[in-house]
Image (tube, rainbow, N blue to C red; front, side, top):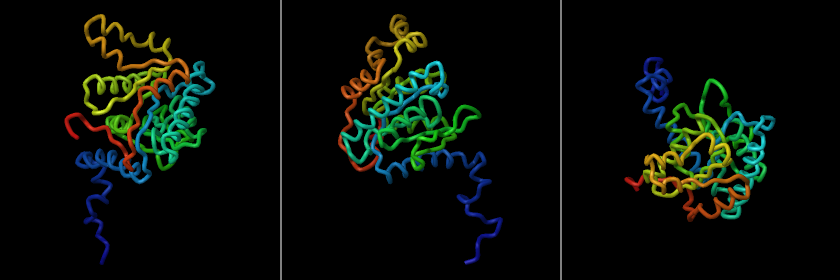
Length: 254
């Protein structure tokens, strides 16, 4: 069979079509289907997600957070191996960049575990770190698809100090928990009490009647690796493995 002529490319092989506005739905769908395919083939079941600033490095003024994120990710990975020696359960996941994200992926690697990075292309501050599993490093263009994958597999979220992006991710999970849009509970841990008390006055929301007092209990707080691990062990219910990603379904769709 003769190859197609230059004017008769199959649509899904035509870069000019895929990169135009008309191809946007296919690009969005690809950012859903590609991670799903890879995670199924690797047997990755669920995750513990680490959020935090890309600006907190080993030599930064807040380097203690980098060190503790690394230690905590290693502890989570060792716990993961207790649950399932294959390392497919409660896999440490980050946004794939530097700072706290790098520390989390590095800690998981220290403990001999797999580790996931959902990276996103940005003009600055966001390049995949060197501690990611190459096959579990995913590049996103759309923030909302990246957020979907954070939520889709998470059993727990640990939020270290960070800026606008970290706040955005934190409140995304709190909103999902508050509104019951995900059928399973996700343990949300704020790490670094002093920092978070200065940055977010959640009690003021309750005092003003903007949230119910019970909504504040959606958050747990920790100031050490031991405290965070006790919280995770008490509140994370891994469930039985089913051979593939355990996706968090919407409460309106099984």
